Length: 568
Image 1 (cartoon, rainbow, N blue to C red):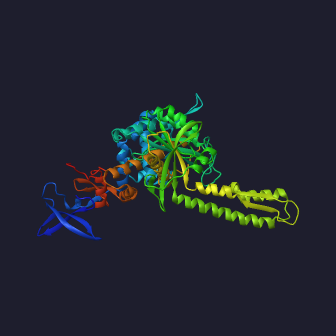
Image 2: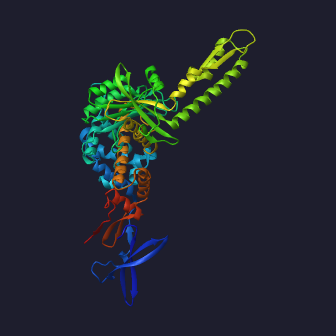
């Protein structure tokens, strides 16, 4: 039977006999059509042909099957279950699913329906996961999922420490990924590393501390670091740090982990806030090249930007931006007590934005100070100074403000520091990059750095689609294991994306195609049907677009329908 069609037995009476035919019903532009498939014989007189009382189609409950089966196939290919069970080493009874089975099912849930996180058991019971794992619905209870987390990360009372297997699991899973998808011959691994904060809502955790985050929320958080490969955008490793840890300290720990994972040294791209002298020296010591942005705060960097002119010529051209172009030059300068090559690049679009933002802010501050001069005529000096600090904020370097005493003049006198404003204008849209691989050109350095948004997209996927937040656990071992499950979900997302790319989907269209394929498959249901002595497996709502998508990801037989003939 063709997927998407409904088969049934048609009874046609002629004289004293009833002749049976197998027919199919199908839809064409929303209308139901029927067609003849085959002649079955005379009812009750032909061997194998059901009698009248058995010609009804009997079926069981339907289960969500399409998307679940796709992700399960990817997880099995990546050896999620086997790896977790081997490294976790805390196998329960063979009468219940293993920890690897529970956590793989949980990761699939994070991809398809993260909102049901508190109802994992009931959600699993509506899918094909029990059939795929070989265990009944009732085996997937809430406590069993939580116990499975403890095989990944558990307390060891004898040494009063948390035993965390996630590092070894990351290494093994990344090895499997590279086994399936090796780097092109002669190419070294290029990875990007960055941090994001994960907030806790209404709970406490030993590794959660109040820290800085983009939303300025004074809530406990942990910092999650992720290492992502530039070649195929797959997350290789992840790290969980206290919310107060800075980027530089976490990156140094990363170098140790890269060595432990025996990743052949390549190029490590880090964010501007992570780059530093110590990190450069440590990366060189373990054979890795480092690429990152330099903060504008140090005097030597500001002086470098101030004196370096970046010509807008074909030789210095890097790429086109929204309103202009990006140009770059490589200069040799003294930085961190050594002669180093630094790339300075300009972004015309960002230069305009920086200038407008600064001029708007300073204009607004000037008006507020003028108003304050009159409004605070009778205020004390202490109150005036406090008000000035609040008005000026972080823009103090561009203003000279003083409080006058007595006389008839306004109490607040101010003026712009024109020299500082002009200096800042010369640095608008201008940035410095340090790359320890001096064999790369200025253009290659800038393109590599600006192209590291793939690690930011990884975080965006984790927070938007996998719904990393909110964290609903408070024990350290559970938090670390939960983050590992979310990384499993990211690995599934990456594996599907990579298969679509290999199947011919363009880079700029792969995200939309991936979301659409999962959405289409989410409507596919499996049902078991009994017709007389024949039992069939039908997959409902399978469209041509779904079949094309499965062929593209090299799983054309994922929804193969089966039939069984009962002889008794």
